[in-house]
Image (cartoon, rainbow, N blue to C red; front, side):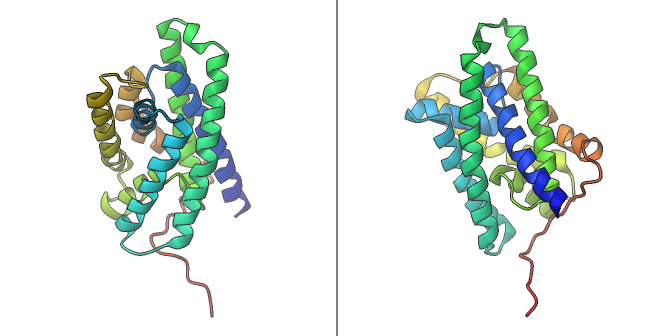
Length: 219
């Protein structure tokens, strides 16, 4: 249990770091984060607020996928994304002030891919700990173990369908695309594979603790 808590905290902060780096590079990030960046531009809000609202909706969808009500899981995911959205705003703002946008395109793409690899490893950590996680990543976990026969690649691709739709809707309204670039394609192609590799090679002693139903307390 202490290892699982360390993995949760480490995964949360490192995931926000990787997302902040990829967002600041403007060379593409994960479809979910890209959809939230585009929403923030369309609606005139901060990226952190867009992440929080969309992720809370995803947490509710997870309850439907589980086919039962798990209030601790729901509240845990909302709490997770509250801190995550705050840290993404901090990291992306810090990297922007450091002048990342002044780098050549190839340098920013390299940073974007680095950020993607970092947050994939972080996702693997708190998915395996399975105490609390980002709602979008819990969606992948639920799909992976309940619907996709433990295939993380297929589960990840299914999870990416809603943000792609959100990006298209935003583009139709603003005629601009933000945080969508080669890094987004890299994520679409390799996100599930990178998480699977991290499961094997990043802290391999940390095993999956997936649960579909709430734990029952003894009377």
